[in-house]
Structure formats: C-alpha cells, structure tokens
Amino acid sequence: MTSDQVSNFLTNIRNAGSARLSKTDTLNTKMNRSLADILVREGFLKSYKVLTEGTKSSLRIYLKYENGDLKKPIIQGLRRVSRPGLRKYVAKDRMPKVQSGFGLAIISTSKGVISDREAKKMGVGGEHVCSVW
Image (cartoon, rainbow, N blue to C red; front, side):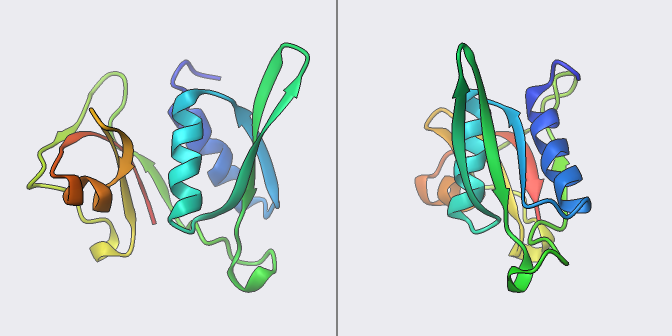
C-alpha cells in the first residue's frame, strides 16, 4: 500500500468493479469520504458507510452496476490526475471535460472537494484530483 490514499481509494474501486464485487472496503479519511460523497451524488456509486471496530475505522463502498446485475459496472474508468510528485491545477475558466462531458472531474478547491460542474457554478478553480467516466 502506498502513502497516496487517493490512489489506493481509486484502485480499490477499480479492482472491485473488475472483480464484479458488490462492495469494497477502503481507508476512512476525510478525502476518501469527500470523494465517495461526490461519486454517490453524481450516480457512480450506490452508497457508502463508515464502519468502526474499536479504534479502527474503514469506509465500505457499495458499487453500482447497470441494470442491477453484476455484469457491467457504472464506473468504466478512474484516473488519478494530480499526484504527490506532480500536482495539476486548473483555473476556473479551464475546467477539463471528461469523456465530452459524460464523465466527471473532481476538483479540490478552497470551498472543499467538489465536482467540475459545481466548480464552474461557483467560479472557482483548484487541484484536479481525479477523473471518472
């Protein structure tokens, strides 16, 4: 496991979708909860919940599949854009288009972690964390 918790989060979701699992567990961090919240709000995940066992805490993520069966996951691709060794920032007027607008870019701004659509509405730019399609 690397120290980049966002990459671990995205890899857990990607691997669970490839293995056609209905749920997966990952680290419970504020950033991972923010990412999961955005993905649920935008319709890429069913839901998530925080599991606590003693002092340990994890995040259980429930994946969403097309037509309800475990054949084709809604999330077709996840890509980490800004990484610890090379940060990528976008201005408010240069928001990236993911899959011609059908995907989602997640931006970390001074207003919190939000989707590209919300960032355009608010008129803020920030760090382009990842893209989902």
